[in-house]
Each structure stands twice: as structure tokens, then as C-alpha cells.
Length: 271
Ligand SMILES: [Zn+2]
View: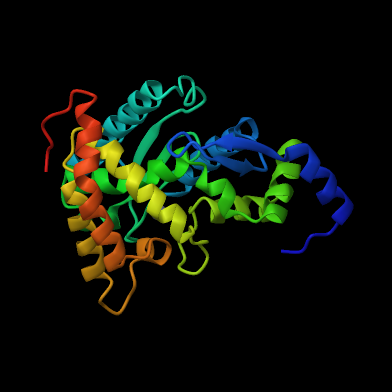
């Protein structure tokens, strides 16, 4: 992508630089485009995505995606409210859809707009497996990782387009790439390792508060790893590298996630 006018970009930098606090780590994160601008754009992109893809409805899997998604969303709200972040999700409009696509993939856009691909379902296997993936994806959204995934220059271009209320094809593509909507391997930008680790940890807590056994997380990633042994790399893995460190981490953190969930009165964990 070419930046055509540096003076405009520089001007946008001053307009759009602000900070969001990551409610799970307490750390300030750079937010070059505020949620008030990102969210309406995300909602529009999500609706567009659904129009262009086959949304699965009325099947047990489709119902499962909605049910697990709702439980994860409720868990996120309970967690944030209990930790002094009331209102953090006030502009979220949660939605959970299963889309017919063989890709092993799932994502959550800012504002709680979730898509799970049918290709993921055989690896997720059941509600708890799905909760691992959805917890992880929701964690990326809550921690504003998508914004940090785009370079400053890219964000300013999108910010400029949103500010001008006209989203060019180029910016639309950038946005989709940054938030994981691309379906081609190589098009998607990877989250950094530290963001992956953070999302794994937050995701475990969310799934545990939602009543799912966090011990299932390491098992899910082992299935992912097995799947990646074949010729074609699952797409989900191209942005979510599976490795033994991740699996070890998840095993170690599971007990802590259960302890956190018990504070919310959750004592049974569905596996
Ligand atoms: Zn991830």
C-alpha cells in the first residue's frame, strides 16, 4: 500500500492517537483509531461479510455457536463488571454466526461480531472445544489487539477514510486483513506472540466463567497441531501458531482459570 500524502497522514496521527486500557492487564494500549470510529465500521463490514457468505442456520452446530457465544459474552461482561470496567462493552453488539466454509478459522471483530467457519467444527468437536476458540477470539477483541495489528500508517489511512465517511476498497481490504476476515493464507496478518499468549490466558478465564472446563484448551490445541501435520496447513494455524509452549502454558494456567471462575460461583466445568 502506498501512502500518497504524508502531510495528511501526519495530521491524522495527531487527531487519532489515543489510548485504550486493556481491562485484563491494566496496561495502556495505543489506539490510533478510537472505538467510536472502529465499531460502526466493524458492524458494516460484518454485515457485508455475512451477505457474501452462506450463514448456516437451524442446525445443531449453528445453535451451538450461538449458545456458546452467548455464554462467553456473558462471562466477559461479568468479569469486566466485577473488575471495575462497567460500561466497557456498552457499544458492543454481540452476534455469533456459523458460516459455511472449509477453512479452519474463527474470528471476533471489535464490538463482539463473531464468525465461526464450518471447517473448524470437526476440530472443536463439542461445546467446550468451541468455547476454547471463541474465548480466545473474544479475548483478542476485548484487548483491542486488532488495532495494534495494523501499522500506524495503515490505521491512519483507515481512520481518514472513516472520518471522511467513505471507505475505499483499499481501506476495506486493510481493515479486513487486520481483523482476520481474509480467507486466503498469507493475506492475514499474524497477531504477535505476546498477543496470542495474552488471548490464550484471557480466553481460559472467560471459558471457565462460562462454565466450560479450561483443561479442554490444551486438548483443542493438540488437535489443531495434529491437523497441521498434513499437507495443507489449517488457516487458523497460519495466524495462530500452535506449539508445545502454548499447550504447556494452557495446561499450567487451567487451575488458575478455575479458581477465578469460582469467584463467580462457578463450580462445575463442562468438558
Ligand atoms: Zn489468536
